[in-house]
Length: 235
Ligand code: ATP
Image 1: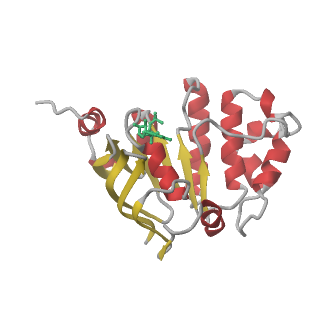
Image 2 (image 1 turned 30 degrees about the vertical axis):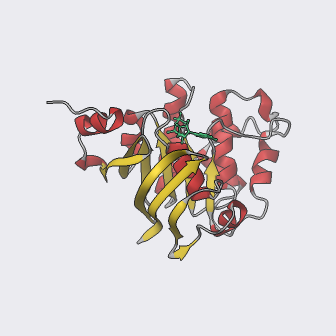
Image 3 (image 1 turned 45 degrees about the vertical axis):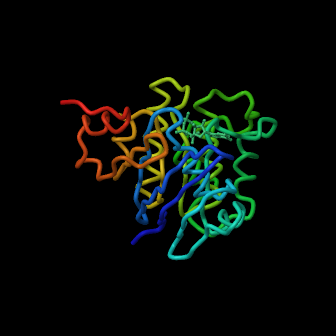
């Protein structure tokens, strides 16, 4: 069953149109990858789903109900949670306090401090450390952990890997695989094609604001993805 359905979504920033008639659906329990080059519209798509932009047209249906008229905070209470690009954590709070803040107004569900520390064991020894002193990878883990604390039904994650070393990215994606296997529905935005193809059940590619390819991970070839990503056609 579809948990999220987007129909004919177009989003503008003033005169500039960033998304053109994007439709897609994501099933409950699925991990869905959105790839695309710089400026393709990936962050815009996540922000549109989260309700952070004013301009979108089209329909956003969550668990069978239209939510496109709801502001972001109301979508959070329905269970849509965004981890924005840039690992935003509260720098002056400790790791533990950041997680506690994530639980504010939380929905009922399996995610609590123990569950988050279970998925991100590196945070345990850092629990009393101020977030501003964490490395980029640690902050990313904390940002995801904080979002999980609200017990979302749909987790939107914008570029887990941005600016991180390969070994750190690998660890984060291992943790993400645990989150996905817990039954969470996740939309992951990435520029790194290889990484997303390991964790996503299905992927779509955006090119200049348009969805150019979509399919199950095993059904799309590397060449098709590369063509879609760069807007090139070989052979
Ligand atoms: P990146 O990987 O660089 O974050 P992206 O695929 O997430 O890229 P978006 O950030 O969604 O792309 O941007 C899509 C387009 O919309 C880009 O051309 C960008 O310049 C433009 N854009 C994004 N935010 C704004 C804004 N606040 N005002 C005007 N244009 C914007």
